[in-house]
Length: 408
Image 1: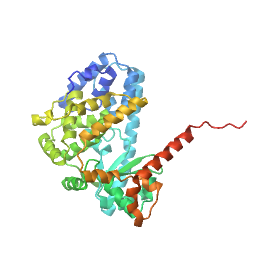
Image 2: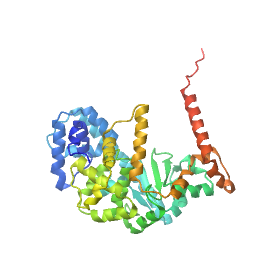
Image 3: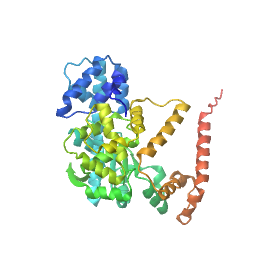
């Protein structure tokens, strides 16, 4: 495990980014104020701070956290930029909330049970404000059986399914539902995106069904929707942030807000994680809260912490802090680290599951369109189709790199 001085060795701008990546509840507000003042008093680079706010997608959170602290010396231009970014974030949240309401009402009319994920409703749940968390897109979940009807509802509202899934045959569609976990929709008029999920990446179909069975019903804006139980929400956020190695501080800020609340039974969360094989995503996430925010680690079995590979923490701290990867060697090393990290953090698969997924690739259906009676042929042709797709991609990139001719 890293020592407690990790954050102190980071730049003042990064420390301020972390300090303003969430809104602490009353019991932790004074500590957050002290962290904010300490970072600013260290003489930070405000341009670096603005870049980090953009990268970690915390404009409204950061502005709100800074405004909580009286008599801060923030340059006027920086205040204007932060205020502008915060307003853009809030306006985007309002648009997302309106689109979400439309989708939920459409689902309610035809009896589809829907579960909003992250987005404005998580912002409302954590902070009591729809617009405090920035969201790039909307995420909705429903059961696999409801996906076709949900697609019809969304398309009636102006959403368009991603092209690679729009023309699949029946067998191809069944294969997609088995091996993937969401579909992407783009709105034809409102510059917005929506992901329609039927399970989480780290879940089996059975685990997703049990999570739905544990969910409760709530109402917002006259719309009925499903809400995850607290333990399921914790694991969902840990799985989402963890599989991306906590690249954005706003994801860790969400978990920090839950950690400092009183509604989570952490022993129950650990027991739940063990049953699902997700303890290696929950435990490192809690250790990160200690390293990054100085939050206490829950009183759990000590043996659980000792068994964690140090690389899980080292990797996430590096990714949280590191800038964009540049250079072929750096990309190669990062790829190897990603592979090692995924192998440690993701639930173990049987050999049968591993090979089944290895033989699936939706892009193959675009390269070679076979009728359903010949669907079996995709498996033996998989290596050939893989090579063909990569040769086509390489040829395409070379064509784009050619200089344009000029007629005089």
